[in-house]
Picture 1: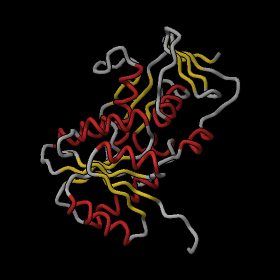
Picture 2: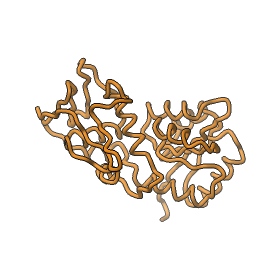
Picture 3: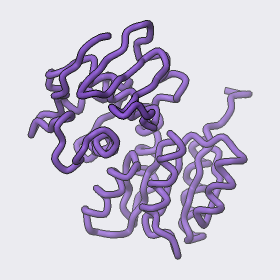
Picture 4: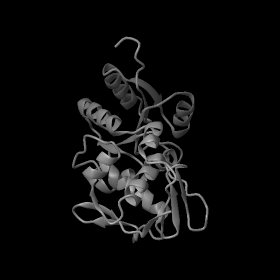
Length: 243
């Protein structure tokens, strides 16, 4: 439709040929495309332009794509699709756990890239929309010394310090706290987070849970609060009270 703003994507890759390929394919589908060859260039683009999604090369030349994904995720809620030429699935899982929402392996078909970009964008909840979806009001929740305040969108550590959570991490924790003891499948969690197009290869919920655990669990490798229910999903095991 004439006059509609294009969704703008950022392609971060040190190979000019890959950037050109992705730009041509994405622009043909109506997306605006920005490019960056390094993490520093990516930061300049993100600071200067609104970006709806980032594609990020895992083996960014001279840098670590995983490290950059971690840094981006700590400061931004922009969805990330990791692009990797490595065959080792461990790298892909680590990338997802550090903050990527999906991955694509090189060599890739452009139609797969387009499909995954559209799927991630459809299930992504912008911060202002997500904030409206978490119940507010005077009710607060406590669990194991922690306090979650939906109206302030604030989580406090038992020490009293504020825990720095991304929008997605806060919303996931609120979903768990409001349903203590209930086993939630990945599909249910995706629906509750306003998601769509869940596929068996997509492990972004697992990555989001892993990031939340690192922030609220004393030992994220042996979680006591967010329990894995093998073959099903997750359950919140904290003693929740409304205050």
